[in-house]
Image 1 (tube, rainbow, N blue to C red):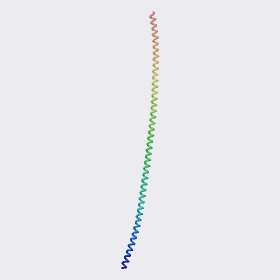
Image 2: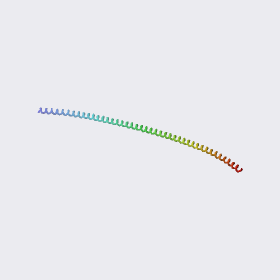
Image 3: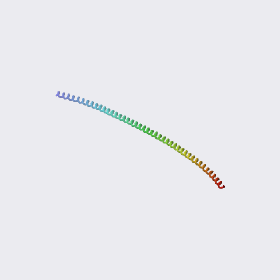
Length: 155
C-alpha cells in the first residue's frame, strides 16, 4: 500500500505540476493574444490614418484642380469680354468714319448743287441781260420806225 500511496502521490504531484504549467501557458497565451490584438489594432489604426491621409490629399488635389479650372474659366471669360469690347470699339470707330464720310459726301453734294445753281443763275442773268439788250434794241428800232412813220406822215 505504501507503494500505491507513493504512486498516487507521485501522480497527484505530476498532475499538479502539469496544471501549473498549463495555467502558465494559458497566461502566456492570453498575454500573446493581448499583444497580437494590440498589434492588430495598431495596424488597423495606422491603415485608417493612411486612408484618411490619402482621402484628404485627394480632396486637396481635387480642390486645387477645381480652383485652377475656375481661374482658367475666369481668364477665358475676361479675354472674351476684352475681345468683345475691342470689336465694339472698332464698330463705333467704323460707324464714326462712315458718318464723317457721309457728312463729307453731303457737303460735297451741297457744294456741287450750289455751284450748279450759281451757274444756272449766272446763265439766266446773261440771258436776261441779252434779252434786255434785245428789248432795248427793239425799242430803239421801234422809235426809229416811229420817227420814220412820223416823217412819212409829215411828208
